[in-house]
View 1 (tube, rainbow, N blue to C red):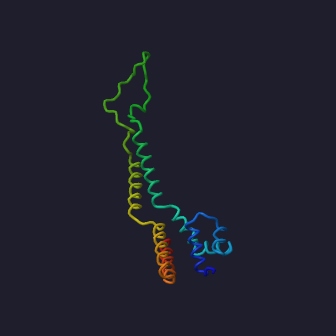
View 2 (cartoon, rainbow, N blue to C red):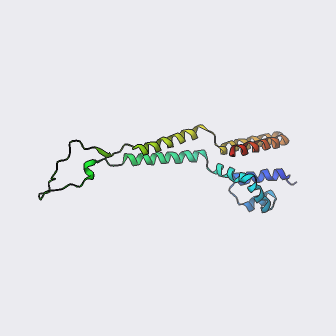
View 3 (cartoon, rainbow, N blue to C red):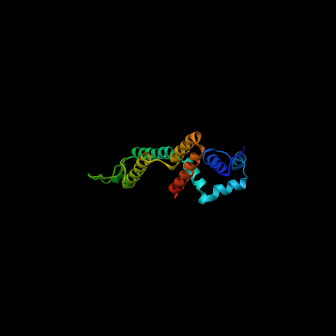
Length: 177
């Protein structure tokens, strides 16, 4: 028994977005031509491509990368040597190798292991991005939950699952805009 066109399309969408297989393999599994599959993939302004990209870049991966950036920035700041203004000026020495000028009593620090304003701004932005990502649900997570729910309903009532799946697809398209 073959799949209906809507079932083929839904199955193809699942394989394309969730599995790491070629378009040729997807077309064979679903029972359509590669041309038909490409038409589905490119439809709705490349909705499937956007969805696949959002699923591939998970929120956890983004958070991990941001934490890594923050750690590298903090490590760079902590390991930076302290540089005083007098250290930047050339020192003139007499014939015996002694400095001709006495170092000033107040010798301000030019560079230290404290964050400067640009670094502080970067730290704040990275921290805010982490906080935002930790507090919201990604489109990929929403899709995974929706697909799991549709599969659950499919076992109970296939026709209702199709209707829910259509509404869910409309919801995801709206979220991607």
